Image (cartoon, rainbow, N blue to C red):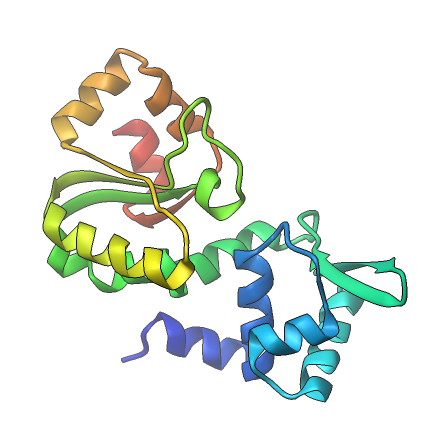
Length: 198
């Protein structure tokens, strides 16, 4: 039985390409030069250069010159940017951990990453990264979040709603819930259409 990481490895044969895509999708606003990318990816310079050149060629990466250095950064207008963002957040990092630990988290009807987390864009006036709806085992969730905060070296803001609270706030057209419904998000558990209609 294939898990998400196995599927990505079979779809994208190059280990270095996977690392490069992961880096640029998880740091969409951080330009990096070749030697910096070599350090971040932990791979040989020629392999990294080859993959960055390929990603630039298909327009996944844009570049700019600063002095004698060429910097690479994510092209958010790339045709499949949202799709790759979703795939990689469901496979690695916080999203991957939530999906892999679904059984430990209780009866979760919906789990989603907001654009605050995936794109560095705030959701309305709120700065929430992760939302879970259902009967959630908060201890298991806290353990996952703490582990990921150490790994990512940043604070993760999350909120947990019981389904009844979610439904009530939705019915009242609560600003936070409306922002979640209409905003950009990556559904980890549950269906986007069900989330909107639920």
